[in-house]
Length: 292
View 1 (cartoon, helix red, strand yellow):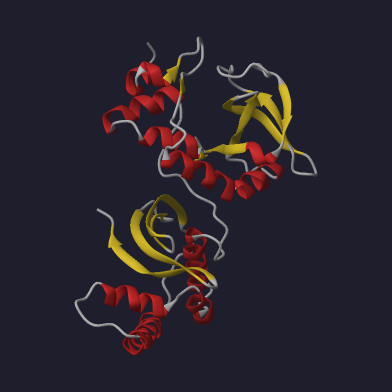
View 2: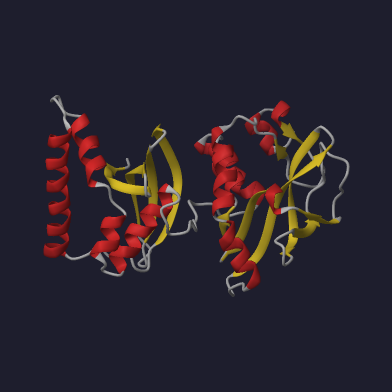
């Protein structure tokens, strides 16, 4: 029995002679669903890097869903490239187990809608590879090093490449940090919703709430935000690389996002931020507090 079979249980692992075992993750696994969504939201970075790779990027691969009748299987493609219409082409990189319409080393073309993950190796470090991370998250901490050795990858939180816009909670955080770097107070305030921040703050207190009280508190929060920047300057996020390893859903419009910041001096910090889906898009309400 292979290492992954020992970790996950034999019924959840397909052993493949001469190759790493394939872990079968339940379809309703929330971490895997988020991994696939995250891969789609950051695919633009993979495509841009593939067109113009930097010297430290020495490996590219894409995972796709192969469908064979009623069966389906996620398979990695090596030597990937896209045509002008965005369709993906590559070489089947691992022997299929559940599908029989493709085989190892076969060159295939596939629609981009069937992409479920991507990965780049940068200076020996895994970038992307979100489904690999989702699998790794399910194993005990004491077995993670053995897993990394099995897949022959250096895996930390990585660096994520969400677009800095208000379409995702992570994008809203990046937009706020970008506004700080440009020292643009108006752009920073566009990434905030002081009324909702006030409502969230007051909801945790034992008091009667009405719109007037929320509005007054929102104005105080806004003035405090401006005063803090005037007195202490803009926070500096220049040179920082970001990873967003976790989302926690509070309700449909409120999410707590864990952000890992890699600093230019090699340091690392972790924070949790409250985000809110407002009529103008996702905004940042404020820090939840340091993550233990």
